[in-house]
Length: 101
Length: 430
Image 1 (cartoon, one colour):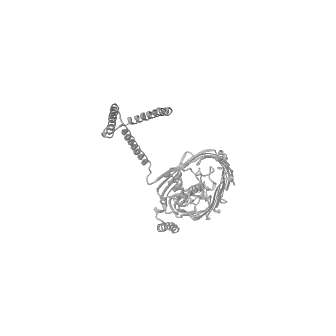
Image 2: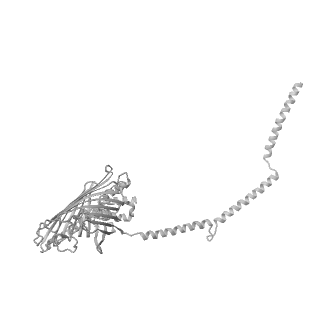
């Protein structure tokens, strides 16, 4: 049993490291994927809808003025992790919240 | 002849005035070309006077433009003072802005708090209160720390517990790796809906809390998760490996013993699907191992499904929120004394809430009605009782994340006294 459980943990960790390695080659660089490039107008419009659709799915949405721009960046990153938001959706939402603030 | 002479004289008489007038006019025009001595001298005096005035003005202008630096004019002095004041204000504002700047990291203190009152049929009524601060620290664009404390009153003490403490690394757009203590990803209600300002009733469904809960509230371990868009749809996943539960002497599982009681790690996760805005369905699972009192290793397998639908429509003058979750857990058979029963449990909840947010009556927009049915089936021959509950609630929203909840719960326990309850709660997310 000891060996079996260690195998599970080692397999999980190996999988993660392989995943990290694969992503570092196949995906855009971290700067490219995480930097917030200016969004086109269509994407900004979509940000309102994405904000309403994704946030209201679980709870009442808070008005944009309830947080500062810097605070929204933290809050939306938190919700991106918690609610498995798609990265582009999260960027569009935070851009909308900042523009409406 | 006389007549001719008379005509000549008359003509001359008539002509003379005309000639006289013309001579006079000619004389006037002739006189314009010349001025008298007196006029000339007067004009000369006036010209000299004007010349003096012009020279005086010129001198004055030169004097004002050639002021010495040490002696500014009044206007110049005012302008310089204004510029100095402005510079001073800009310096102060810069200092204030710099003081507020969090640097390259971002920090947010959020969370929620609540206070309530519960009166149950066969227990003493009691007030209760709690406070859950959440600390979010965005270290980089791809690195975030999240921590939550739970401070709750119990008897004479204030219980402090660590709800979650997790460091997450956003590997790319689709993969996030987290390590630490995190809310159970295989339990949708616990992970997304349990905070009091989100949960629409004052208490949790019976299978989500207490000693007979079917799934853990949190896990201590490592997880990989993310969301993947498919055109207008989205898929999401979360997989984890954690210390897992342990077993009590009565056959129930203990999820709050975070120091692992054996080397058997729990592996679990959830896959969610969002075919369109407002709908999310998911499947969660967990495979774990526990030791019975005789030391025998028993496998624990849990399956869970969840359904979440939100629709806002003018035809209903508001929004309908429908949710449900079902979980089934099976523990291997144990030969320990008192645990020879089939250790299989199931439970869940179904809930519908309606808020007339599009109603023409402003006062109605703030109300929300809720109806929930929740149940739990525990192993036959165990010390626990099956239970079913109906709960009706009415909420009033003071703000987007602040509400008052009133609820009445009809309880039905098999083999024990029913315990109906009246509940009140005020809660706020900040």
